[in-house]
Image (tube, rainbow, N blue to C red):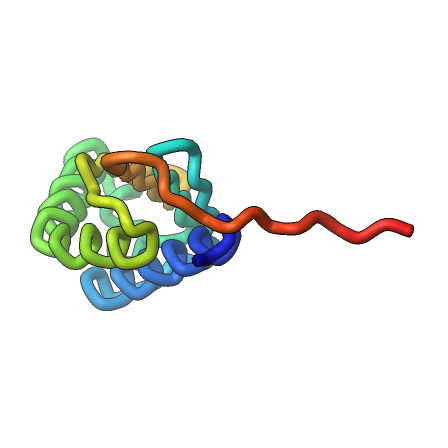
Length: 129
């Protein structure tokens, strides 16, 4: 059995692989938190240069919408892979998946709801004395 930190690290690595394989670029930074039956993953720096240019264009609102639509479509196509990765790490089924990207900050958030809290071994705090 894994610790919470090990599970969070493995989930973060799975999301990095997904972003690289499905969107051609991995995040600059990743943070993963398991909270009861939810897994929250925050990815920083995920937008490509082309997406940044599209978001800044004179048709900015339309460009931002296109970026979001394209990324939603890519997640839907890769959803079985994402769910299998989460299930392999946590031992729980994914009940629902929610995601959004900020075209202003270039951050993306994933929230996975599981069929129950994952079990992990307690991590031992720093030794004293």
